Image 1 (tube, rainbow, N blue to C red):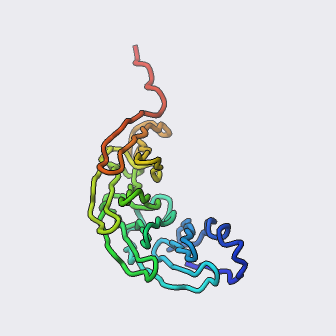
Image 2: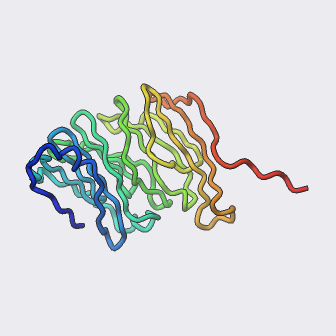
Image 3: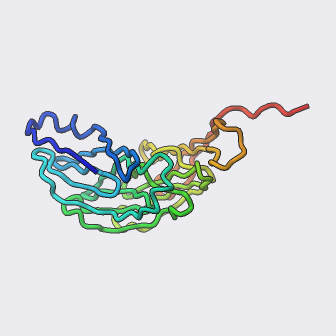
Length: 231
């Protein structure tokens, strides 16, 4: 992976620079990586590595090597993309292609904990950034193209212990949104690669959860109406 860092010390551009997306070639497949800024520091997640830089000088403070096995890359249908990290209370949270959620010290890069979210060998990978809500870190995973049954999980931000999990049977469509103490998550029924279902027919639902214990507040089905029965 080739990441070029500007040493321009014009600090007025820090916020704009750090909100952009960079693209690199990872193991011969295209991947998209995002830049996230935390005060005077910037963590760039590049899939198999995470690098913390001083946002003013561009000096690398620490590197994290995830050691994602080569065998995990084949399950990333759109390439080994990683769409960013989350941050809270001095910790950076990274989802990995091999189904792990990792907490790093934002100051030193030291691994604080690792939690197993999903078995990547089933065709599931984590590419979206986690979401931090209060003392919980929430993540899902992709894999609907391979018929994976989806769920989202919440972990204690300090310990990595799983607090709750909701199994939807559908794949997680994107990172969740949050308002107050409610998390909104979209789930999608996408026909797997070997499915005989009509291609392009996407169905899903949006579910609202209480952040503390994962209790469902409401759920709404989305998608095209069912075709009329044959007479």
